Amino acid sequence: MRRQQPHRSKRIFDGVGAAVILVWLFLLATLVYREEIGSSAAPSREPGLRAVSRDLEKQDWMEIHLQGRKVGYAHTSVQPLDGGFLVQEEVFLRLNLLGRENGIFTTTRSVTDLGFGLESFAFEMRSGVVSFKIRGRAENGRLAVTTGEGRSARSDTVPLSGKPVLGSGMVQSLRGRRPNVGEAFPFSFFDPSTLTQKSLVMKAVAEEEVSFEGGTVNALRLETDFWGRPLVIWLDDEGEVLKEEGFLGFTLLRSTADRARAGISGGGDLYAMAAVPVKQALSAQRQLKRLRLRINGLDRAEFDPRHLNEGRQRWVDGVVTIEKEDVPGRGRRLSAAEIQERGLEGWLRPEPGIESDADEIVRTAHALSGNEDDPVILARRLLSWVYQRLEKRPVVSFPSALEVLKHRAGDCNEHTALLTALLRARGIPARVCVGLVYMEGAFYYHAWTEAYLAEAWVSMDATMEQMPADATHLKLVEGGLDRQAGLIGLMGVLQIDIAGHDYD
Image (cartoon, rainbow, N blue to C red; front, side, top):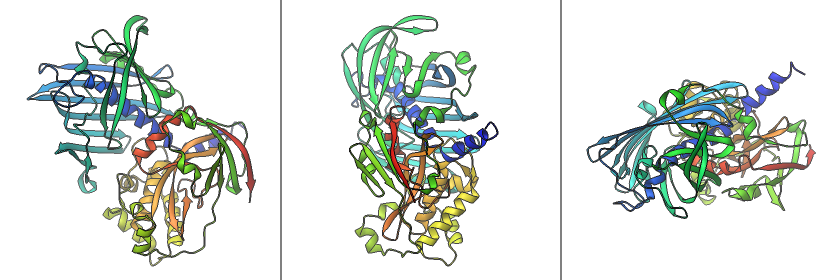
């Protein structure tokens, strides 16, 4: 049994990875949020923004802990500029994924006005050889953004509702003033990873003593719901962030430069923390025709359950029945009119991370196709190529089909991004799906693809080389990171029981 354990762990390690992206989305957003708490504390030139002294210059360090172990740090610096501030933040995080430690490093540089309203920003995330870069500038109610660099750079515009606020430095606007207990105030922030603005309401709920550096400190407790999860922040008497608690046991503590960077380890295993264990074991899952799952906890998160009752899934009285679909041997291409009539045109367009119109993606898709034009045969060919050519290892970054094609490595996120882009490049509607898949006694967060073939959506898992995907694939959301972020609220609260199953 001992000899088999590494093999079993490797299957889980190679087969899942969506939880890493969800956790990182939460951490990035809460770090942004932590720095903006005071942005709505008083009236200003822009709604929700409060101007501060032109002379403000500050360095802040925070330790990041996961269930009692230090796993990273965040460093923020604020420097005055003519008519505003230069705010820079670096974040380092070390994650333990089934015994393998993976380091992630991000830097954010933003130029703001005196109320910390965003004027421009540059964000970079690095993990091993893979990097994700995005920069933007606010102009006339829109944010002009560019992702990537060089030949792979892509530009887009994002509509804005009011002046955006980006991360780092916003807590400075609370200096000299704390909200009163019972006071609630709205604010918004711009999340560079999902290119979305989000509005939240923060409430000051109590004055209390909290443990800090071996003693107790009087602090103001603030609470909000963040993607369906409670987020708690404590401010000291100066209005500075003292401590923050998020989901899965993540805690941020104010620190010094030397202490924050010392003694960082990978912490507990992130995959295991995010997994949903089940009491009943499943065997020969590829041969499952039908699986019935009783699900609890959906009501405790900002989660849209409509995908539980679509396609191959049916949801009745809290039980989801997943029935593995049949795949025809051959298919036909839909005309442009048919694509439009069925509302599929959106699943053919490029989007962030799915660069299906990029020259490298288009050339690869056509080279793999040869003279074949049947969409079912093409889909199988592209699936097998992605499965065979990508090294299966964790890449802790936001997935990009172009980056995956370049580095030829990744977990489920990278396999899914590349397959989806290749399918779209060949005119086959395709979309990213994220949910859970069963492996060795638990359901793990996972990503795969659906392609529209022969009049219906068909599931395709490039990480496991399955078409259709086996019946243990429970789809929760479809689409990009902005939609996937809704799953954060389910992590750690979802409960699943196997209510029944049938084999072919």
